[in-house]
Image 1 (cartoon, rainbow, N blue to C red):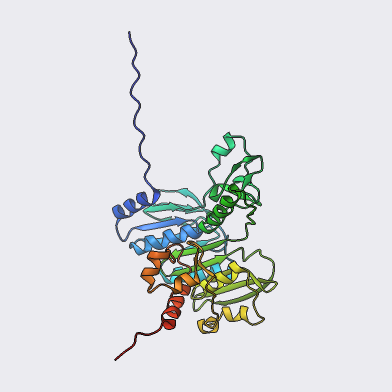
Image 2: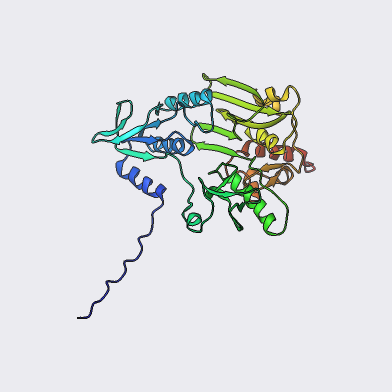
Length: 348
């Protein structure tokens, strides 16, 4: 008797998680209840997106405050207050332990009734291939400052999957920086990655957060201002007159300028750090030279932006503001400067 092998089933195409979530939200409809487990950047963005779709949303975070990896307790407290003002309840210092018939049970015994649970409890680097290849892996593929595997110099890595000086990153700007370094290394250059640049930006409706570096652990003098009533928290860490880390919650009108000073290692005057935390007018007198990089995502200089006629043409020709969006405030000011400096057409 001749045996035949059943034909292999075609692979089932994977559906992106966002599309699955979108379909489920559409099925549930406005008025449904949702719980987001995880109060990090992704969790807050998801929670705000669900709330904007009309779902009654709650957030559960195991740490004592939101964005515990990026912010200190004052900033996290301001953020939680903002979320509650927007109608989203926040439970910190509590962990989800069990799915139940009515919803989700927390380790404090409290039970949340919900129609949808979204887990945003952090990501892990994909290291299976590196492990099978016998490369050194801890949390990620361990690389040196030339982005070479420490166990095989023929292998390079960058982005979310690598670990450099004991740290991994899930953000776009460090990956672009690593790509530039690796391109130079592979073409015979001597560039090295020191892991110093890290910019995280929360993009969620009615929530504004930007974190530069590691403001909770960086060494230096701290200049800080918190106004929970206005929903703002600002923290700068200054070492040798240079901004080495910053955290901004609430008004981000100065985030573009602070990012430029941070990126370029500009030495501040004695009063400048404090002025950066005050009203916009206090920092408005600072003029960026044409060579200053304004948009780190697309590598666009101040001069290139000043040469554009409008924000729309700037986006089309340079891609500035189309990445994380943190440079938009500075871009708008530079475009205004460019218009004011152009000669007016003769009249009459």
